[in-house]
Image (cartoon, rainbow, N blue to C red; front, top):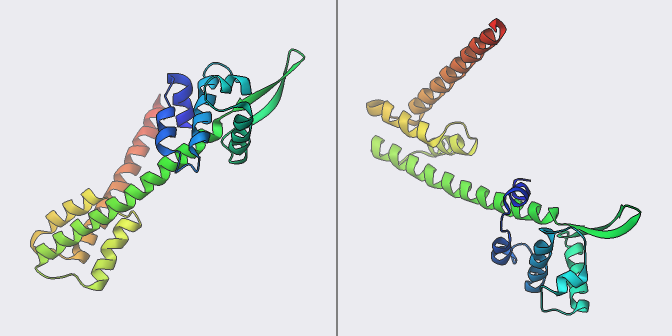
Length: 203
Protein backbone atom coordinates (compact mmCIF):
# COMPACT_ATOMS: atom_id res chain seq x y z
CA UNK A 1 0.00 0.00 0.00
CA UNK A 2 1.58 3.26 -1.14
CA UNK A 3 -0.34 5.42 1.33
CA UNK A 4 0.76 3.30 4.31
CA UNK A 5 4.37 3.41 3.16
CA UNK A 6 4.23 7.21 2.95
CA UNK A 7 2.62 7.30 6.40
CA UNK A 8 5.25 5.00 7.92
CA UNK A 9 8.33 6.48 6.24
CA UNK A 10 7.47 10.17 5.99
CA UNK A 11 5.09 10.70 8.92
CA UNK A 12 2.30 11.57 6.48
CA UNK A 13 -0.65 13.36 8.11
CA UNK A 14 -3.66 11.21 7.27
CA UNK A 15 -6.05 13.05 9.60
CA UNK A 16 -7.04 15.79 7.08
CA UNK A 17 -8.12 13.06 4.64
CA UNK A 18 -10.26 11.39 7.31
CA UNK A 19 -11.89 14.71 8.22
CA UNK A 20 -12.65 15.51 4.57
CA UNK A 21 -13.71 12.04 3.43
CA UNK A 22 -15.31 10.44 6.50
CA UNK A 23 -18.81 10.46 4.97
CA UNK A 24 -17.60 8.86 1.75
CA UNK A 25 -15.80 6.29 3.87
CA UNK A 26 -19.14 5.49 5.50
CA UNK A 27 -18.01 6.76 8.90
CA UNK A 28 -19.96 8.81 11.42
CA UNK A 29 -18.32 11.95 12.79
CA UNK A 30 -17.67 10.34 16.23
CA UNK A 31 -16.10 7.34 14.46
CA UNK A 32 -13.80 9.66 12.52
CA UNK A 33 -12.74 11.38 15.77
CA UNK A 34 -11.88 8.06 17.46
CA UNK A 35 -10.11 6.87 14.30
CA UNK A 36 -7.90 9.96 14.31
CA UNK A 37 -7.15 9.35 18.00
CA UNK A 38 -6.12 5.81 17.10
CA UNK A 39 -3.74 7.16 14.45
CA UNK A 40 -2.24 9.51 17.05
CA UNK A 41 -1.55 6.49 19.26
CA UNK A 42 -0.44 4.36 16.29
CA UNK A 43 2.46 6.72 15.60
CA UNK A 44 3.92 5.95 19.03
CA UNK A 45 2.90 2.38 19.75
CA UNK A 46 0.58 -0.38 18.56
CA UNK A 47 -0.79 -1.34 21.99
CA UNK A 48 -4.57 -0.98 22.10
CA UNK A 49 -5.96 0.96 25.07
CA UNK A 50 -9.38 2.51 25.67
CA UNK A 51 -7.71 4.74 28.27
CA UNK A 52 -5.23 6.07 25.69
CA UNK A 53 -8.11 6.88 23.34
CA UNK A 54 -10.12 8.59 26.12
CA UNK A 55 -7.22 11.00 26.70
CA UNK A 56 -7.56 12.24 23.14
CA UNK A 57 -11.35 12.50 22.75
CA UNK A 58 -14.29 13.88 24.71
CA UNK A 59 -16.33 10.65 24.76
CA UNK A 60 -16.68 8.49 27.86
CA UNK A 61 -15.27 4.97 27.93
CA UNK A 62 -18.62 3.32 27.22
CA UNK A 63 -19.12 5.50 24.13
CA UNK A 64 -15.56 4.81 23.00
CA UNK A 65 -16.16 1.07 23.38
CA UNK A 66 -19.26 1.26 21.15
CA UNK A 67 -17.42 3.31 18.53
CA UNK A 68 -14.46 0.91 18.57
CA UNK A 69 -16.83 -2.03 18.04
CA UNK A 70 -18.37 -0.18 15.09
CA UNK A 71 -14.94 0.54 13.57
CA UNK A 72 -14.07 -3.15 13.90
CA UNK A 73 -17.37 -4.18 12.28
CA UNK A 74 -16.78 -1.73 9.43
CA UNK A 75 -13.27 -3.18 9.01
CA UNK A 76 -11.37 0.03 9.74
CA UNK A 77 -9.75 -1.41 12.84
CA UNK A 78 -8.28 -4.78 13.72
CA UNK A 79 -7.48 -5.72 17.32
CA UNK A 80 -5.71 -8.93 18.27
CA UNK A 81 -3.76 -10.52 21.09
CA UNK A 82 0.02 -10.57 20.88
CA UNK A 83 2.31 -12.63 23.08
CA UNK A 84 5.71 -11.10 23.76
CA UNK A 85 8.17 -12.07 26.51
CA UNK A 86 5.51 -14.35 28.03
CA UNK A 87 3.17 -11.38 28.29
CA UNK A 88 -0.11 -10.98 26.44
CA UNK A 89 -1.29 -7.62 25.18
CA UNK A 90 -3.86 -6.24 22.76
CA UNK A 91 -2.41 -4.63 19.66
CA UNK A 92 -4.26 -2.86 16.87
CA UNK A 93 -3.82 -2.51 13.14
CA UNK A 94 -5.10 0.27 10.85
CA UNK A 95 -4.02 -1.16 7.47
CA UNK A 96 -7.63 -1.38 6.28
CA UNK A 97 -7.98 2.39 6.61
CA UNK A 98 -5.20 2.90 4.08
CA UNK A 99 -6.81 0.36 1.74
CA UNK A 100 -10.20 2.09 1.92
CA UNK A 101 -8.75 5.55 1.30
CA UNK A 102 -6.67 4.28 -1.63
CA UNK A 103 -9.79 2.64 -3.08
CA UNK A 104 -11.56 6.02 -2.90
CA UNK A 105 -8.70 7.74 -4.71
CA UNK A 106 -8.59 5.03 -7.40
CA UNK A 107 -12.34 5.41 -7.97
CA UNK A 108 -11.96 9.19 -8.19
CA UNK A 109 -9.20 8.81 -10.77
CA UNK A 110 -11.34 6.45 -12.83
CA UNK A 111 -14.13 9.04 -12.86
CA UNK A 112 -11.68 11.75 -13.93
CA UNK A 113 -10.36 9.51 -16.71
CA UNK A 114 -13.89 8.86 -17.99
CA UNK A 115 -14.69 12.59 -18.02
CA UNK A 116 -11.38 13.36 -19.75
CA UNK A 117 -12.06 10.75 -22.43
CA UNK A 118 -15.50 12.22 -23.09
CA UNK A 119 -13.95 15.66 -23.43
CA UNK A 120 -11.25 14.33 -25.78
CA UNK A 121 -13.87 12.55 -27.92
CA UNK A 122 -15.82 15.82 -28.30
CA UNK A 123 -12.64 17.67 -29.33
CA UNK A 124 -11.79 14.97 -31.89
CA UNK A 125 -15.30 14.91 -33.36
CA UNK A 126 -15.25 18.71 -33.67
CA UNK A 127 -11.83 18.58 -35.40
CA UNK A 128 -13.14 16.06 -37.94
CA UNK A 129 -16.38 17.93 -38.61
CA UNK A 130 -14.59 21.26 -38.99
CA UNK A 131 -11.99 19.74 -41.31
CA UNK A 132 -14.49 17.74 -43.38
CA UNK A 133 -17.15 20.45 -43.46
CA UNK A 134 -19.97 18.11 -42.45
CA UNK A 135 -21.45 16.19 -39.54
CA UNK A 136 -19.99 12.75 -38.97
CA UNK A 137 -22.02 9.66 -39.74
CA UNK A 138 -23.00 7.16 -37.04
CA UNK A 139 -20.36 4.57 -37.95
CA UNK A 140 -17.67 7.29 -37.97
CA UNK A 141 -18.70 8.43 -34.50
CA UNK A 142 -18.63 4.82 -33.30
CA UNK A 143 -15.13 4.34 -34.72
CA UNK A 144 -13.81 7.42 -32.94
CA UNK A 145 -15.41 6.39 -29.64
CA UNK A 146 -13.84 2.93 -30.01
CA UNK A 147 -10.36 4.46 -30.35
CA UNK A 148 -10.74 6.00 -26.92
CA UNK A 149 -12.81 3.42 -25.07
CA UNK A 150 -10.52 0.55 -26.16
CA UNK A 151 -7.38 2.68 -25.59
CA UNK A 152 -6.23 1.98 -29.14
CA UNK A 153 -4.51 5.35 -29.60
CA UNK A 154 -3.66 8.33 -27.40
CA UNK A 155 -5.51 11.61 -27.82
CA UNK A 156 -2.29 13.37 -28.84
CA UNK A 157 -1.57 10.77 -31.54
CA UNK A 158 -5.11 11.13 -32.88
CA UNK A 159 -4.85 14.92 -33.10
CA UNK A 160 -1.44 14.67 -34.81
CA UNK A 161 -2.85 12.17 -37.33
CA UNK A 162 -5.75 14.55 -38.09
CA UNK A 163 -3.21 17.31 -38.78
CA UNK A 164 -1.21 14.99 -41.04
CA UNK A 165 -4.29 13.95 -43.02
CA UNK A 166 -4.90 17.59 -44.16
CA UNK A 167 -6.85 17.62 -47.45
CA UNK A 168 -7.44 13.86 -47.35
CA UNK A 169 -9.13 14.06 -43.97
CA UNK A 170 -11.53 11.24 -43.17
CA UNK A 171 -12.02 8.94 -40.19
CA UNK A 172 -10.89 5.96 -42.25
CA UNK A 173 -7.72 7.68 -43.49
CA UNK A 174 -6.77 8.92 -40.02
CA UNK A 175 -7.26 5.41 -38.66
CA UNK A 176 -4.92 4.12 -41.38
CA UNK A 177 -2.26 6.64 -40.30
CA UNK A 178 -2.69 5.66 -36.65
CA UNK A 179 -2.50 1.94 -37.40
CA UNK A 180 0.64 2.39 -39.48
CA UNK A 181 2.33 4.47 -36.77
CA UNK A 182 1.42 1.87 -34.17
CA UNK A 183 2.90 -0.89 -36.33
CA UNK A 184 6.09 1.11 -36.90
CA UNK A 185 6.41 1.72 -33.17
CA UNK A 186 6.09 -2.00 -32.43
CA UNK A 187 8.78 -2.75 -35.02
CA UNK A 188 11.11 -0.12 -33.53
CA UNK A 189 10.51 -1.49 -30.01
CA UNK A 190 11.35 -5.00 -31.21
CA UNK A 191 14.53 -3.77 -32.90
CA UNK A 192 15.54 -1.91 -29.73
CA UNK A 193 14.92 -5.02 -27.67
CA UNK A 194 17.08 -7.10 -30.01
CA UNK A 195 19.86 -4.50 -29.90
CA UNK A 196 19.81 -4.44 -26.09
CA UNK A 197 19.79 -8.23 -25.96
CA UNK A 198 22.85 -8.37 -28.23
CA UNK A 199 24.59 -5.74 -26.10
CA UNK A 200 24.00 -7.68 -22.88
CA UNK A 201 25.24 -10.89 -24.51
CA UNK A 202 28.40 -9.11 -25.60
CA UNK A 203 28.99 -7.94 -22.04
